[in-house]
Amino acid sequence: MLTPPQLQAICEVVAAGSFRTAAKRLGYTPSAVSQQISTVERTLGVPLFERSPRSVRPTAAGLQLALRAGRLLADLSATENEMRAYAAAERGRLRLGSFWSAGFRLVPTVLTGFLRDRPEVDVRYEEGDPQVTVDAVLEGRLDLAVIFEYGVVPHSWPEGLEHTLVREEPLYLLLPAAHPLAGRPRIRLADLRDERWISYHEDTDAARCLRHICAAGGFLPEVLFRTNDYNLPYELVRQGLGVAIAPELAVVDTSTSPDASGTRLVRLTDPTHT
Image (cartoon, rainbow, N blue to C red; front, side):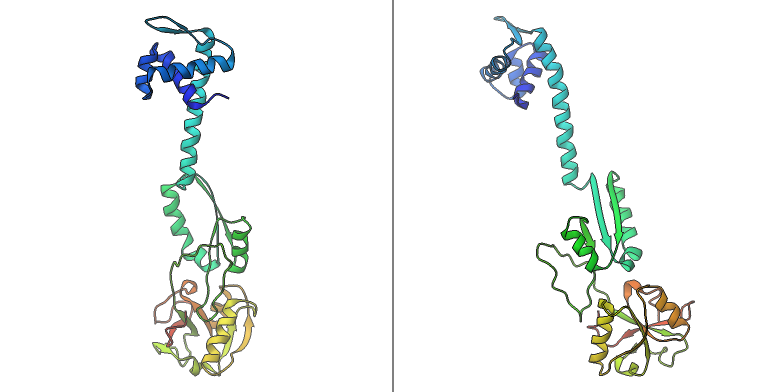
């Protein structure tokens, strides 16, 4: 099988009309170039050059091989550059997964900057909680995933995954704007033992987190409404049907004044609630 150095030698000798000049361009000795050409001629069983004391002239076979060799070398160089672009994340497909609030608040901005620098990358996005997206990464259906965990509900993620901490964020209490505690800058969970709670489904980390932090406050929450719709708790709270907790990424407004939706966001006193 012909090798790229042999093909390069043939192209250079045809272009230069001399073993010596071709060798100088390639950084070889004239004898090394001559040996490469002779090896190819023996392998193919056809003379590629007519040799004379002063020059070499390509035969018809030599000209045809040089033409094909030029195309092959160009394709090989293009392939190498393409693979380097893949290695530098400038080409290829990126399959990204993320949970809802990060997908809404973080991912669009990050992807915009990423694609500005790498316009030829084909990005595919899927939404899902960590229990779904982590499995997808392990199975090769996703390349990476933005996941979360609550400080009081830590996870032991499978081996073989690389983790990078993007941010830590506090938990907020979501109250109706007219709630008696809504004017406080911070609230202790112990002050909320008699409240009606809005939470997520029992098998979610958000629900587990609520149980943990309320237990630390000395009570178990009375959960009247459960939903996995990130928007519904705001409407239920706005209507005065209960209170809820939400991480910073999921909140609509982190100010301490009532927002237009009729809800109020207040920090919890315990800084470990993240």
